Length: 123
Ligand SMILES: *[C@@H]1O[C@H](CO)[C@@H](O)[C@H](O)[C@H]1NC(C)=O
Ligand SMILES: *[C@@H]1O[C@H](CO)[C@@H](O)[C@H](O)[C@H]1NC(C)=O
Ligand SMILES: *[C@@H]1O[C@H](CO)[C@@H](O)[C@H](O)[C@H]1NC(C)=O
Image 1 (cartoon, helix red, strand yellow):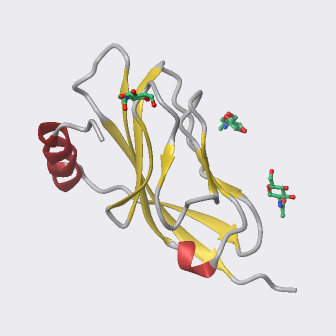
Image 2 (cartoon, rainbow, N blue to C red; image 1 turned 135 degrees about the vertical axis):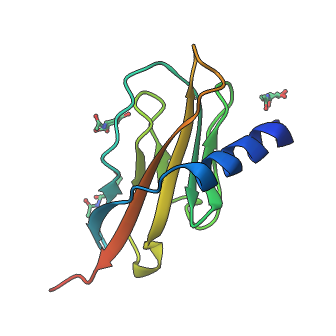
């Protein structure tokens, strides 16, 4: 992995410093869910974390890397940065953060905080 520690440290620091605005989003277990984010700039690098653990990463060149628990269940859009989780499980609930860098201002990562709350499938 190429992520320089200085960038990792910066992202971590930014996450600590950023006023955590958490937007609640809801999904239903058993269904597919796409986080409602849309980045309009050209994206250079995308990292999605769940409860501070990396779940998906795209560094601009190679294929997207998905980590547990999204291995085989995730899809990251390189066009708009949105993350899709297939076949939601209740354990998918958590705080998801999207960090990305646009291709012009490499050193100004931006973050989205999404608190995903699982809903039971009321069948
Ligand atoms: C979820 O997405 C997969 C792959 O696109 C599709 O095969 C499946 O039918 C979808 N499931 C639901 C519940 O929409
Ligand atoms: C991208 O993949 C190629 C071939 O798998 C590898 O040689 C290269 O080091 C990778 N680049 C990065 C930035 O991970
Ligand atoms: C983002 O792009 C994906 C395809 O790459 C699409 O399925 C999704 O609807 C898009 N999201 C938004 C908010 O436009």
